[in-house]
Length: 162
Image (cartoon, rainbow, N blue to C red; front, side, top):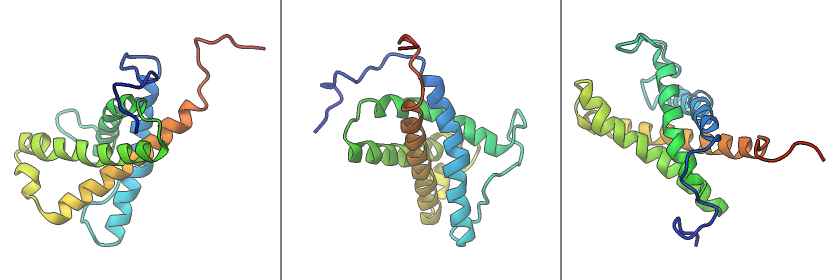
């Protein structure tokens, strides 16, 4: 079992890959979170439709772009944590659980009350399940993009050439 404290490959310092993490999280919303919401909507399991273009307050940004921005922000701690995980199963399980639980809890306990909605959105089972599923899809999708980009990005600290 891999522990966070005992891994030499685990570093918590900021580096040049964090902008890539932001991009992965931003795209994770557009490519995984919103399509999963579309599937749930098509199955009649939620009234929420994917890719909402309604303007957000106070800046008037389309809601889907706001969601993508916050997906990018959430991807930074996800990427930092996933750097410490080497086992394949643990990597994907961490991405799923952090993706599903972290953003959902912050939305239920902070964002909704700040917007005047009840804590947890009223704790309706369908709303809880929808949030966990779409945010879990975001976590897995973002982890996939993080892994995919980490294998393709040329490290700038290494010389180029033979």
